Image (tube, rainbow, N blue to C red; front, side, top):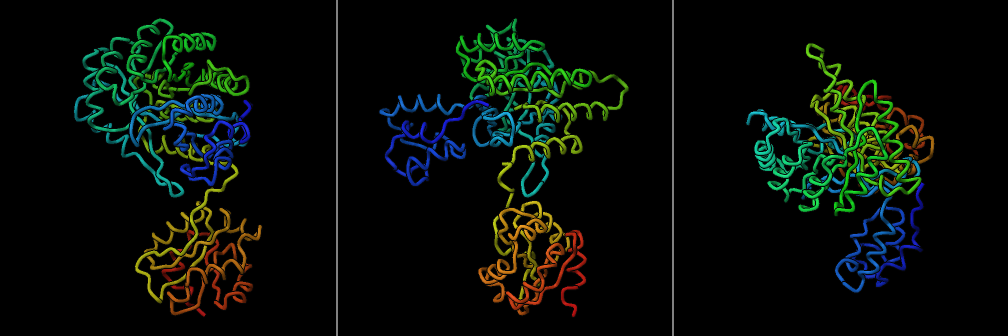
Length: 471
């Protein structure tokens, strides 16, 4: 693993003014956060505003540059940042900048179908543990092979969406025409090859656009291509070693793994760039009359394997919910902090039109537990208070076993949120998994504890039948 700088290496290159503009108490605290990679260098405004710090800034940028550089695609709030990876294995620190999912659109689609596909890409979403899983960008494919059609489609795309755009063509003339039309939107150009690097590299350098270096089948050729593009002034590079689906997937996975290991373990700058995978390649093997579900499944398998093996951007074709759910789930879980439980804020939640007769339940602040319980309460359409107790992100069963959920904590929460002032009863509904705390909780709180369902799926029936009121 590449050596990551510590606070004592970063601190001497900071202004040392302890101005607190970054939100930290002093420069050493900021240096510590930078070493932990929980703050960005840009948060230190004096470094960027005052010319006297220019040398320090240059040295600091080089010091904290991740082994895999970051590349920005698009502009504004919807821009996609890819790369920026620091470690080979997630448990060594954490992964940053989740894999971006771009969906293709042919440039020769008729107007209504074109607009409809853009809208479908933007509308694809699924709520998972309190977050909206979604796609990230649009890959415009130059199927027409006509530069004017390609540029017109690119311009139309910018009118329909503010999402990041990838311009896909191996024809330099087509890329040049489309790049000129939408350069202000900072599209990703795909791609420069061993045959077209001079022309396409000039386009990227001229408009200061990110560019894909594409050299399938040889990491040596890929490195050489990157080196050449750097020499002619292309700064933001994404590398594509080629994607083989189905029978060639093992080779592809091996290539992506070698690239990332070379960048992080060997500090190979020529391969220290974000990687692009094209699971859409599965459709090249699709035969007329063959069930499209099989091809979609191959696309999912390819995407899944390459997300795990370091792909920073993947290009897909299918928009089906069943195909994109597994890979968005995979991405969501892969890019969480392995040492930090996914938690929600503790507090007293209200569902429906609560009043003095409303039931009072409690749960932990583990996100998966909370959002599952929240969903079941909402589906029951019951007017309910839900007390969320801070258990440091542990589930009910784990929190009880680890003494993060105790009768004392429950009593403190009831007091802190002044629950007794909101209802005319003193009945508290406990999660079924916390049943063994019932007696202690009654002693600590003075409330009567009713044990709810073991599984949250039973909450709706439990509340609707008002079982908590039974003697």
